[in-house]
Image (cartoon, rainbow, N blue to C red):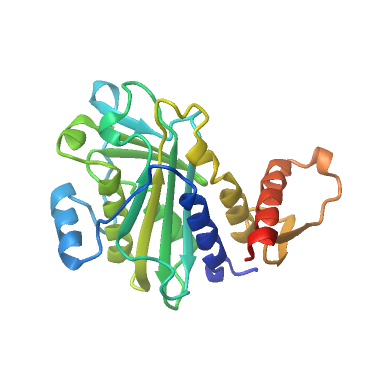
Length: 262
């Protein structure tokens, strides 16, 4: 699809739900489902709306928690859709070590997936991606981002005040509702790791979803979607293709779609 702003990720949201359904220990709550909850989030964490003048720098002994720092795995995606009822507004799901239990000096893996139901006109994909980074918007939280990856540092004062994964989710949900008029519902899925999660199993399980997102968002020009879960590539030389890892991940998605349906 040439117009990436019109891409609908309803199938990928369904795939995400199947994936999260297989995780053990997932917690879920309505963290910003009402006007009162959103107002409380704005007051408590000082979420900045609009264009900010500068972000906080969190370094050295001020760092209490760090997630997504390279080389730890990191996945950061936004999945917009116009399908009504597919996104549970204000709901957060999270799994793994929470921010107050992050081992000192240890960069945990991070997955952050934002689900957005919108009406027309469709939001700009670049704006959707920018908002998920909360750059310059959340005091005490420092973000660095590259495409589909996110690295967060949270300072000690924020953690001492009770900032947790569900607080991050609430801030994200509020930000999208504040900044994009066409947004109807926002939901967030977060995953880190734990002491026994040396392979970052929760975060790595989203790699196939990231690969499919890259294709549908037009980030890989060689691959095109021809049917639900079926892709074609214009390059017949896989051995020398720099996108081979993407195709390998997509093969896993294709098999799953054929077994479970789109």
